[in-house]
Length: 198
Image (cartoon, rainbow, N blue to C red):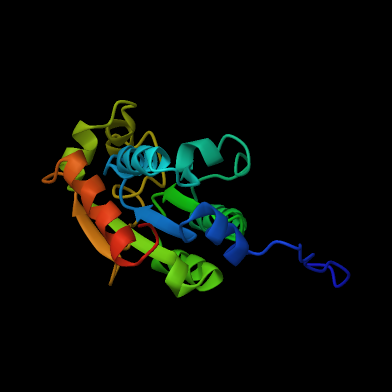
């Protein structure tokens, strides 16, 4: 960053926005393999929170790669840069007083830890969507797992690239055992427990 670039502090802060929104600002970070249910559950939670009047938004991995991260590949370095950029966007959403639900494979523990450090531990909830490769592959409507297994796609998480399971996530969702409704209810429960929502 250039030395002449300084953060411009506005007249309204995150606490003011939280008070007006009547909920706290937080990121719920869904992580897991492709097909593990991250986006499905995130959008289900978003719908429930929206109906309750919350300021809520889902940042989805595919959508982000259409614009902000369209120039990035799936190498380890580019995946790390992908999450770095997203973390900065998330931090702005936090400042806006919103509840942000993110659905990114985010395969590396260090990258997820950096997001947590940037936004603050009290504003970061890590949800691990745990699902077997077989079930993930069976849900794959794009045929990506099949292509990866045949060597047509390189750097595919879980097949030709690693996924580092969270060591101590705030919640583990067994998406091959739980129903979508059960998972959504559990996440709303942790948001109430942590006084993010009422």
